[in-house]
Length: 450
Image 1 (cartoon, helix red, strand yellow):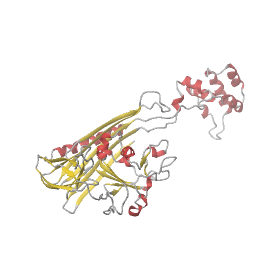
Image 2: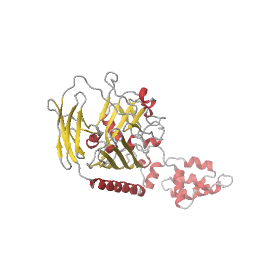
Image 3: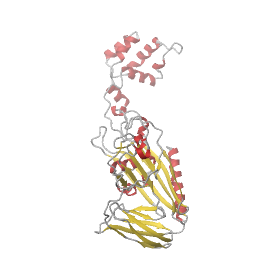
């Protein structure tokens, strides 16, 4: 626990230092506006691009967008599925605010939706009649009642499935992600259009994707993601056998000069749950921070995200109703309190019981089990062999012994439910244009999860 706290503090300190460096840089100008159709209706999730700079943004639910840009003149293009592309030229000054609104007209033919990916070719509608979901995770992470990427995709993507498992070995730790009900190893995950590595965990027991190895999507904090593109059809001809179920492309944030934070908390009060006895369990607190720093004069940036999560466990098993303690367990417990370990009374060389010592110890401590009847006590004292004692000591005394020990049957329940979790993550996405044809990029992160 102390080790985890130290790591969490380190992540927060590192983020704070990087934020301070970004705040010290020169102030840029701002560009904002809204996007609507010919009837005046706002268009959410329209794509606003700065041509030649590799910078894009999606409009929010009110149809607005914004950029922080260095001084200069830019060509702005806005696109939306089913509408013609609209372009404008704008001039940005340091410290100034520029407004550029767009009105899109309906296109005669529906343009093809494209998914970014390695080896991806430009597609047209006649050759790819497959559905692609483009999900604005940046907005969903703030508005949806979900905390991690798997939960958000479960909430909004109809072909996506991810189930929290229990009593499934390491699969309790990494939730398998599936598309169209196929295995986790048949879903290709891309990060910024590049293949994301799979985990080293083989799913076992009765968990989804048993016998396969998938990609841990929850290793990427949802607050670091701008959007997710889900190709809901097989793409093995283009990507290989790991894309039989489809492709998920995760696009990380590139925004700069904008500090955003999120604090999520909640818990469970499930009256219908087997083990629910009132109150709340599974309490969770999650803190996310994101900030982007401008680099160079050509629109480069380094975007940083930090995430800390603490979650309590939930237990959903009914009370254990089998035998927990027999008479021998009760006698053995009294003997241990008296300094005698009956189970250790064996010959160390031949591993055979020291019969006389075992019988003597049982007869010595049996009277301390006060809820036994007089007849039971007499029979135990009159026994002369271990075989004879076995028949006398096998009776179920669970209820009496639980009361003696101050325990309940629920104390022995199997742990079925969500695990306890402590997690800290730091992710970075860097994009630096070198010239009109070359760009330096790097992305990745560090996470520690218990």
